[in-house]
Length: 341
Image (cartoon, rainbow, N blue to C red; front, side, top):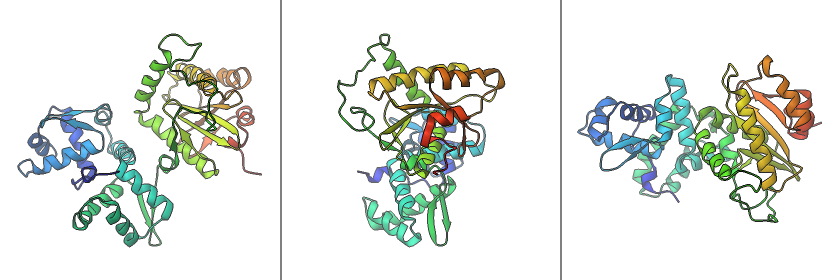
């Protein structure tokens, strides 16, 4: 259930991002933030923009003393305007208000009048206030590049995968049946504390924009195939095609491949753990990265496919996925080479 406080009042999304930059540069109070982002209203606009940055998860504020969250720190480290806009788009998708709105737009492709009527019903306050908030709402979607209009219809322009992916409780198997045993907090064969460490590391990794884009892109890929994308607090992404389960582990790698081997090793370990604790011994396993493999590491493809029976995919544009023929045979209908015939 959304509250009126979940709806930002600040008009410009890019300036909301500048709040995080201002705080990274030592500004804390509303008046300081307001001056840093180029506004002058005795702190009133500073409060609006500070609150909007809180809604997007970039900062927390206590007694007019704002500090960056982990997400805010990551945003403040970005150097290009394009990267910051993409990051803010992701933040919008992860807020209840914009997530619900974008789901509605994706499912119904409303025209402008229909979208405004929906928003008036969705907003939990007065209709007159809803109309003002609607102006800000549309402004954010357009600035973030999330909204596209054509033939008098509104469409979601990018990151559809994050709208169609479903979060599922981890208390059951990946097919929804009851587990024979309670889901262990630690895998029986793992060292003390390892699963807790893995989960904490995953939370940090999921704050990574590349990792997030990989999950989004593969979710969109599955949806285009008519397959449901799912995730839980342990597993990046999985799907069930009439009992044929696939578990994905996404890993961000640098262009030079310096961290490739370490990322692959972590992914192999995680995939085997997930298949075991969720009691899916026949599940297909797949590692997905954001760069193709360097020539010096090509031996890993044989190792993964032939020795570990794990498929490997990569994408260079977060839209199209590639894999070798041996990985395609392991992926079956989930293969990016599969054409449905």
